[in-house]
Image (cartoon, rainbow, N blue to C red; front, side, top):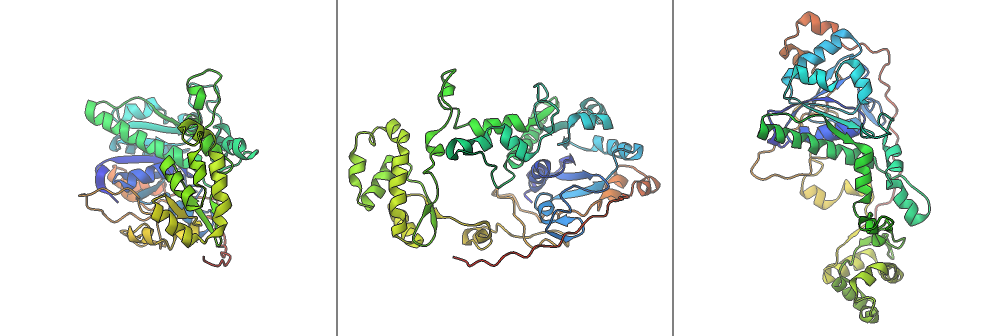
Length: 410
């Protein structure tokens, strides 16, 4: 934990990936994050693999540096307990449908009435002023709607989802910085801004179009798409014994590699020496490189690219990263938790800040582990707290952990 936001308290009413990813960033940066969960807990808790009831890998990797309070917000007592916490907090963050939260009584106006300086931030599927407002939204749906899956169609002929919960995580980053920016605004002006909305559809549309808006930037009927990135030939290259990702980006880079493989004449062509033309015909350059790559091993090519000062790395599978020497050097998988936990490997906050002492992380919390302590501090009596103890009719399932298939390491 990097205690940059120490002293700030976040009421975290988020679940699944988007919101927890965002609030974990805030917790990693030192904020006190109080995760408000229903009696059954965050729906990610039972998703395999699970170390013990309620502690899945995906939950653990998105919910460290938080404390858990279990409340049934459909009950009067649960609502009252949460409203008791509102005056103690700096931000109220959720990724529920706003209409559903409003029905529970936690409208923007109600929360602000209880704490005029609180930041009220909502991650929603679609902005509330558009015609899609209120529609359900999940990562796959937003990847499809935002043009992100369609980028694969432009390149390969069929849309695809990224094999990562990309829309949720990109949205989570936006939610985290929106909360921090709102807190900074309050610090500078003494007044909290209005409703902070982080709409998945709009922000993923912006993410998809940032480099692809193309000629439509200047013309109403301009063509959308960045040729280099949409090139079917832009891909990792097969070597004699593996795969390499390499990007000769500048003209100087290309001339070096063309000379190395005996194709210097390409670098003398008129189209090559015109930057706009070279960009439009980048497929030809990629294809030249693809043809020659199988002639050498991965190690030989990496040595060549290092000698030529051309950016290159071997293609690594996710499990290769567990043994990556650079990640070992920087302590990427370090586990420095302040309490006992089944977590043996975690992904530390990648940001580095000098001259700020790093503190041990809070372990991902068990469901409701901090309910009594936090509510007691907020002024609830022992009798009131006892009545709020979570009672779930749905036991937390613990699926069997799948045994990974054996694979030869390269």
